[in-house]
Image (tube, rainbow, N blue to C red; front, side, top):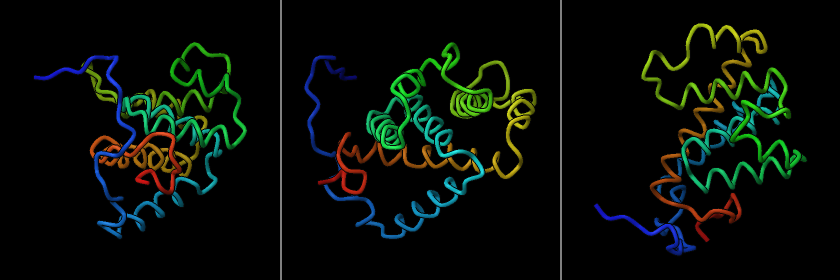
Length: 168
């Protein structure tokens, strides 16, 4: 097993030379459908953004973390809210519904050695804040990031480049 020094410079070029959308054009349709589904307005866009940032952090992927941080900044989210997503449990910057959504993404994306990931109690807590359409939307938003996690860790687009052209 090879290890890399933590001080090693990371190249500013993608691992995969060509945009996967150019290689598999149907990916653009899938991507657009996921964006439409997650953006159906049953859940505030800010909550979707916070959930997707947390999903990128849990995936430990810089591309996704930088991407969703940028989206939140463009939407006018405060730096306090953006930077405290990683430690949301003890942050004073989130509402009860946002906390429920963040707990849901944590449970969905982190294995639980002591039981199922999303317990009935957690589901009930989230359902206190979101109707069934909104719950389905949260599932789609979490799944959207999970879908693109594979693209991000395998193809390795460059963090910070335009969302529409990280392969440039």
